[in-house]
Image (cartoon, rainbow, N blue to C red; front, side, top):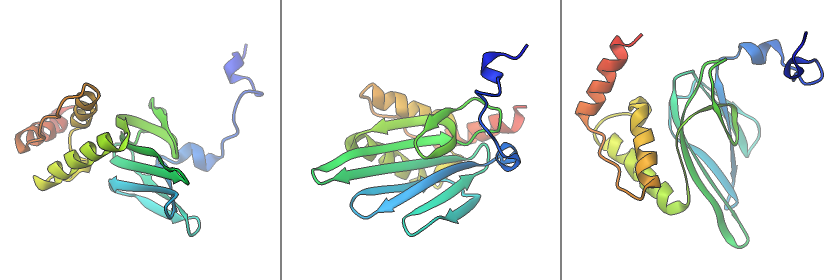
Length: 173
């Protein structure tokens, strides 16, 4: 017997390419003074320019990236958001994010310019230590998210913490 969720009427068509594509795709839009989406950090595996205002950047599974979204209308800014996410493997659980296909493991997500600015400062602080933010421990970005949600200052990402993360990752299966 076919379960309701697996019935032909509820299945979405999926091309062979989409099913076998391991990349996470992020569509970025840039409309001057209206909508500006950009990648703050992350190692792009591929980039596709759709038109003058839109492009799609893609990330390999396990890659971390930061997506900044800003939008305004005639009355001013109505959206300021940053999300730090990890690209997932096909079949792995994920959360959805606007403009991210199929989705990602969201490590951090904040709204409002004051919090976005604090996350950007945390990213700058990691870079100031000579560490690529895309290589930082995913737990650190969760820590930053939780501290900001609680109204507290995030702890500094240190070289010792980064070294411990790399060692843990090298011995973990």
